[in-house]
Length: 253
Image (tube, rainbow, N blue to C red):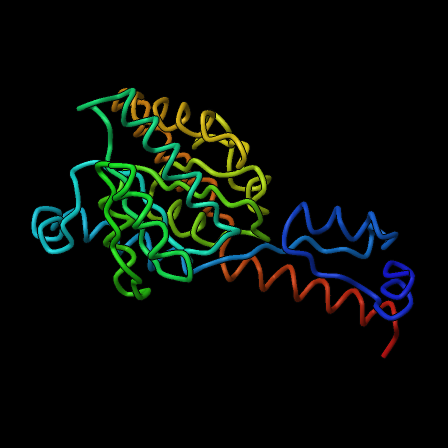
């Protein structure tokens, strides 16, 4: 019924990536009338801001109380973000890696904030820093000083923080439920994908990421920048403009 209603009332669709396009086609919407746009951010803001943060790393690490190397989560503290699994995966990772383990910085806020802090305290999970909610002007500092983004969501239509982190030059460890995974995460090239229900798998990928030699991490950082370079407001606008022009042409003046 939903597919029939959509096909009857809409001439074209502008989908936020491969998975959204596949969903529409699964409802019977003709693929020739589906334009694959993408969710985008101002890449230059995060790239330039991260570069400035790295130039002033010592001062900013002291200002924000950040470790030398850390995994970074940015977003809401809500059930679909799966942060309890992230904390337990991090505990296992830290137990296995010992002194070599990177820290974990959680930037954001939301309904689960207090319960997550309680888990970290009661289970004695060392190395976790709750950095609070940060405005867009501050986020490049956190990306610029981080070593890797981690996004373990159970459900995520896209995941714009992946764009932000990649523009800042970070490798990523991302749940395979994130809509952006199909376009932005190339396993082994700029990051890794994981099952959000498997804390052990996530812990293993965190260990794999932090165990990479410096030259391998540098290659992953460069790959992130290269991949996300095509995901900009300009490319989004061109795709949408073509969708509109083509649809109006079909319908006549």
